[in-house]
Amino acid sequence: MTYQENYQKWLNYTELPDYLREELTAMDEKTKEDAFYTNLEFGTAGMRGYIGAGTNRINIYVVRQATEGLAKLIETKDDSIKERGVAIAYDSRHFSREFAFESAQVLAQHGIKSYVFESLRPTPELSFAVRHLGAFAGIMVTASHNPAPFNGYKVYGEDGGQMPPADADALTDFIRAIDDPFSIALADLETSKASGLIEVIGEAVDAEYLKEVKDVNINQKLIDEYGKDMKIVYTPLHGTGEMLARRALAQAGFDSVQVVEAQAVPDPDFSTVKSPNPENQEAFRLSEELGRQVDADVLVATDPDADRLGVEIRQADGSYKNLSGNQIGAIIARYILEAHKTAGTLPTNAALCKSIVSTELVTKIAESYGATMFNVLTGFKFIAEKIQEFEDKHNHTYMFGFEESFGYLIKPFVRDKDAVQAVLIVAEIAAYYRSRGLTLADGIDEIYKEYGYFAEKTISVTLSGVDGAAEIKKIMDKFRDKGPKQFNATDIVKTEDFQAQISTTASGVEKLTTPPSNVLKYTLSDDSWIAVRPSGTEPKIKFYIATVGDSLIDAERKIAHIEKEINHFVEQ
Image (cartoon, rainbow, N blue to C red; front, side, top):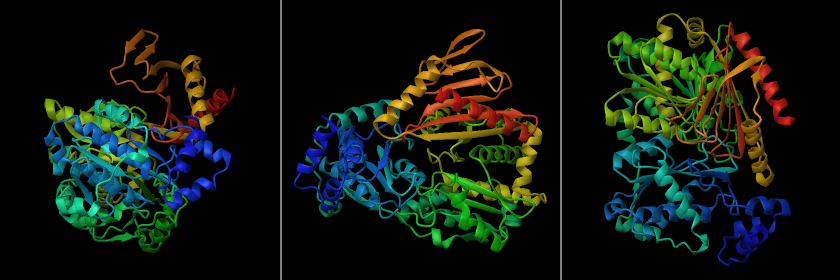
């Protein structure tokens, strides 16, 4: 179908809600094309897009279609899978609650049980709930850290990680085979609740999650002595972190936590921030104001679905410094390994996991403690797969996993990024440095002095619509077919094409063991590296630059040079 035909089909549907019909009739031609030229892509991490009318938007019909696909996948299994059902959670965004309960009604129409949270809950709690309830799958309605006009839909497998490739591919096929999302039937909500097909859950699961969280912190004596009075400012950025993070901190013994109350209220418009993304210093504006008032040691922020954590640390002059995702990963990894070594609880088969686009600084840290680092593709489900492998084979003990995009997991009772756990460990680390008369800023400096000066930068370029998708493909093809030989006058000594699954060096070509993925990575002779990949959830292409220098200034200078060269290469 052309975009005009798709548009007309929607316009002709007599039962379309008024708010969607009004949006349709107000569309200009360019908006019509973008809303209807394709279906919203259901990728390995689910789907995410603008809220609104159209096949390339997220709305009740697109959500129903995705859930109908999940129902059809479940119907290929035995009846016990239907009874195990699906856990469903949602964040504070526009339509999140509607999308969650509509999903449950689609499943109920197929006789599939669902457990739906009574109100907004974090993504990590959804991951936990799938495992805790013995569900076959999970649905999380969220657009993570995206701005207010977005929402999304992620599907989880029975291990609590995002759905594994075989089921995810089958699910995608079922979704694509549905020609008419308007024909998908819904079971009656109240009848389904009364019959038990839809079970509303809440505090009982919260309590079980918080019970597991007690084991995240390592040195309770340290917290009791130095953590009680340590001033921490926390903001949930109008999202789900408010449901658990404050309780988890209090439970651990951090008694001097100040919450940015203006941002503790669920708000789908995220009215106090331009974007609810803890990666950006702008999101910390109110936290910094409160931090200065109370003389806070550390500021922490969780994104709307509380799977990502941002951190700011107080510097010697009293100002606050925004840490990168890689710096947070490094300071957590170092502390976990050091604390367990000191306590005599560091296993001989300790293992850490990170994505291939995350800093090698943490690899050096891991190796210095005799731990093994496992590199996986971007997407936390690949870390979840490693955790499961360790448990099945009993060959390694999982200690920590992270992605440079501000995602961390300490304890594997969750199988996705967990900012609630990360908040707790960062608070303990701040207490640890305080016990030594130091700050987190000093801790970062210590790591650089011991392991080398590593710097990283991620550049995200948004290219939306039909032309954007073509441009992203064109850029990837150019790097793949006519790639550069040097960056910053430094030779490329290894090229890894994760789609072709080959690694090329002067010694020859080797096979990569990771699954195929559209990623290219170039390693330079000075151990710096550059990677390029399209985003799996947004219309973006991402460039990752990582350098090693004689000083932080030197490493950052290298990044600036490489960034200019990448821009020049793309624009040529």
